[in-house]
Image (cartoon, rainbow, N blue to C red; front, top):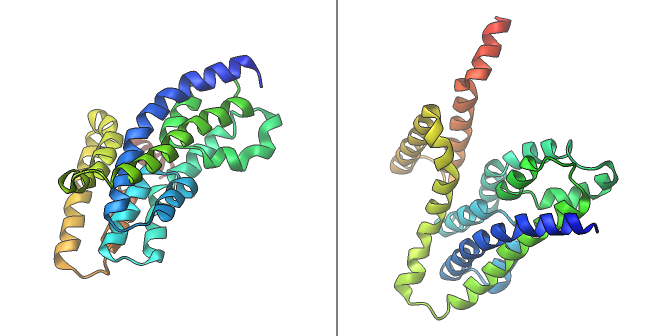
Length: 234
């Protein structure tokens, strides 16, 4: 492994580790309060490695939603990873092609951001060390949270439920600051989900799936580039 790749990967990865660790601690604590076993909580982070989806899955489990609905919801939430991985595949050194699968597994919003702004060709060494550093922060944070949750006061562990909303808001805020369309869609999604939950016509947890599909479709049609392209061909 080249020293420059090691240095650059650690320099970019350690801040992600620091950011992931407390969020994963919150996940570990919340997993414990929802009745998830230690092994299940660790498998969540080891196999899934997707913060927002893991929090959502815990909430859906608490509502009694079945596995099919949970898998479909997390697939929709994580669908952006297909697009991110497809883009990164054009930036990676040809020698690293056979490592696409393990590298794709480690793609998150934060690692994608770092790699997309890296001007040099992405080597296997840089990508995998960067992702391993972030992955270690998430898995170790989950372990710490589950263990520490045993000694935390009930009022503190119960408050960890807001971590999901804080995480999603942190992801959403940069876009809301620059796009009125995104703000309208976010508000519409919240109101529509509230309506579906209130009228209670769908199976438990399925309101969020309906909202994701409808709002994502609306967002595509409201995209100025999409409309411009459509008018050009019309």
